[in-house]
Length: 366
Image 1 (tube, rainbow, N blue to C red):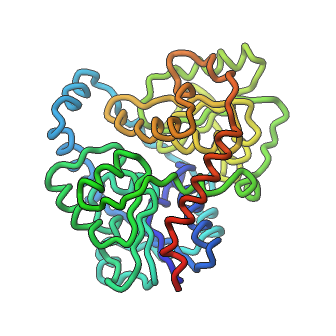
Image 2 (cartoon, rainbow, N blue to C red):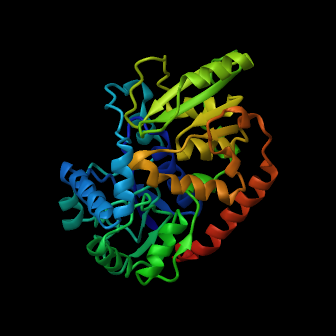
């Protein structure tokens, strides 16, 4: 089949965003299909709609709104300025077939032709955007939701009506977190499944094919921090590294600006190689956690706070799945040295892959 993929992919500094898209693309391709990435260029009003949706969700949850106002934290760190040396555009251009950039109206009026469309993964359902719900797909095409996330948001009554309408005609629905599964089931799709992030559909050897070995002779800790607010002192990593005789390689992403420490703007291939070669990984990123697991690295994940605390559900679900709740940072870096049962992780990952293969039998139709 010819399959169109709709997901987040246009970031210039969020490694997980682009790699989840790449992983889904290669998974679909591995099943013998031709696929392409539908490049959806979201306009500023879409971001406004997301903010409005978030505000309405908070208003309908007074307890959480009061908690956020009391904490008065969680602002996004200022926007980064130059990411050209990360070469994300070159990666997308080389690794995936993409359409030209398309606006919402262009997609709705003249959607790229395909036999099937897949939306997912990432937090593409954090607002009721009709494109991210494949509302443009012709009635005779197959529509699949591959592990989209609601980002921990609680939709208000109006958004629930829209979502119910959008998911009604899907041939297959899955979500990345159990909270999303429960929501879709409440909205009439009782067949909704829990799916892993598509990055977990491949093992370390798959990513090693594109990973670039870092030119680092010293042993090091990889610190990967996104721009969402975390209550964490970066200096603690440098103090721990000094004690352990390790170097720190610090990579930022998702618009995080660092004014006090030296950072590295790695390409996607270099980022994969740096995780593979690290002694330890410390991150507040979901995908930083995923790739630590895939590469059998000892790690700690820093939870988010404030307005972004809702996004921790994906971390909790992931770590609970693999019985690794002790890898969530709680005021000390010392647990990072504790061993991890990667044999259990490998077995569970293979079960997940087999489960997904079986559930997506609809994509084996000709």
